[in-house]
Length: 349
Image (cartoon, rainbow, N blue to C red; front, side, top):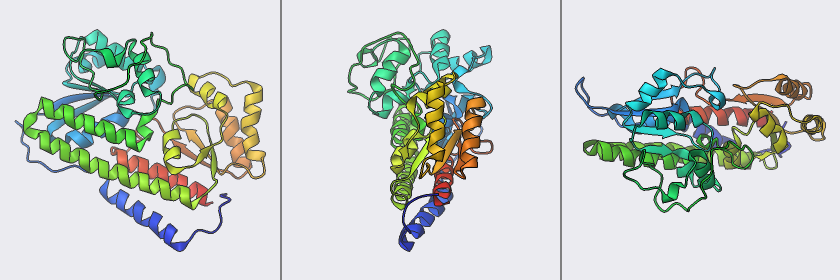
């Protein structure tokens, strides 16, 4: 469906080579000798998307548990259990997305009284608006927070710009909190994980740094692949039901033509105004229509069904991307690589 001209053979070959390389390497990690007595740092992540990143860095010297580890669970409205509270209370390192996405994790950490280091991916991401979103998420100014003697040690990057504190409020549209779809942000979180794990277990510090560097290699390959997809499809436009894949689209230079009011309403679980729905549907009847529709596979409604049907009727490619790891997937790099493959195939139609 792409409107781009014929692509040079070298460009197509380059995409194929990148796909093979990413499939082969995944996130990777260094093999290290272990035994039943080998100590493992207990890491608790809010979702398995971040759990996969933690596992890639921690490798054999980390035990990773994710509060949400099923594609059937929507993190936005998750209600934690007493078992979740016990799990968080035992953690030596905590990892959450932040930005209001997994507010349940903030509540669990607060209730547990656990003072273990907490990595907030939004805070670490350096994305524009991230510091403000992180401050809103925790109801105080992260940059001004002391690193000792507090409820827990925020393991964000030093030198963060101050942001005004505020009570937690999840405002979609002002900041896109799906930062695990941003390769650069994931790379920064990997570095933070290595640093914090090295402090907890200094004897394995070099091992953690090496694993983080390996993951950074996967990040670089993903970024290159995304760039090549964008170059192969100049002027391509897509529609999304929710802003989940936006950062990956930005990495590829693919325009998101979705009315923001539409994707924000769907994400909040409300019905978009009729005029906005009509604007969204018009993306598939326009000449030319958008090149693809990306559905959030974990959130469906009569409105998203209507949009999917309109796309299919217009012969627009429909693909799905999820918020948590798809069933059978455990590696973050391979997950994102599969998403890019789906995007490339859709644009190639």
